[in-house]
Image 1 (spheres, rainbow, N blue to C red):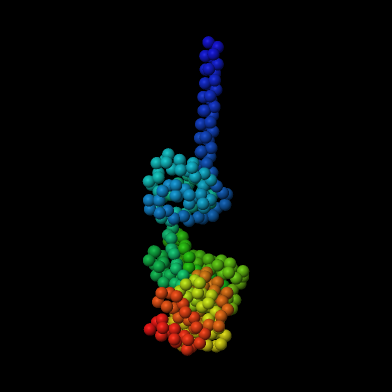
Image 2 (image 1 turned 180 degrees about the vertical axis):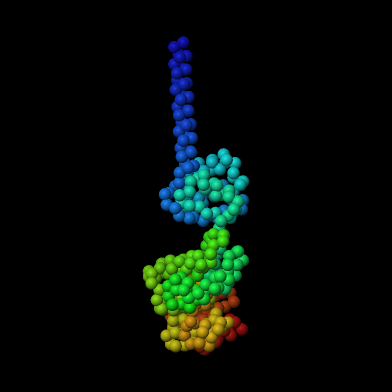
Length: 317
């Protein structure tokens, strides 16, 4: 009898421990669901692909610092039965979102943002067409390009156009966003890249000239490894007061056409990326004055007009 009593007490003790552990786990789990990983309120955009696995999504959320425990969030998704309700597209989260809020956004049928990728070397007109295609006011961007007040605010220099300052990158833009906000976002991204490359915050006349050169490099160089050498050719021709005679400008009006006008175009001819910008500030020292692009993308450089013409006959005719 004494043994049975001890066994009963032991079982009660074990049961109490189990109950305490379950209560503690439930408390911790509930605390996890309602606690943000950060006190800072910053937007984070994450793209969810069609039929993407829950584990893959959780990996993205953890990588961006939105979840402290991926395993608990996985159990939460499965317990709620909402795994199949997760919507593909671009979702907007905040760094102080709780796991409950994150799952609510993942299953939200109304996506608030669109992903827009601007390729390097695109002009304002091409960007405007893409914005219109995505449901934004592309014509408004063209209007802003002639708005001197906005240009001064956005470009931070006495430029006559936004061309060159709309940095090519991937942007997540709220549906119905104003065109001025979109353009400002691209201009701020340009300012960040400019600061990374030059270490400067102020943008001068010399910097504007280099931006124009970068836009030509972007259009002329078919491969990144050739960009600094193309930059060297451009600077060599400018130093010798030779017309640049860049094919990328031939379809443009006289102030931009370097066959008809000596020196640089009056403004950038496109919106260059970071590699072209870097090349404009870091040209490769060279004696070359000419180059051509072969049909396979390889570039051939030469020091004299005679050699250049020979390369044209050899590779392009």
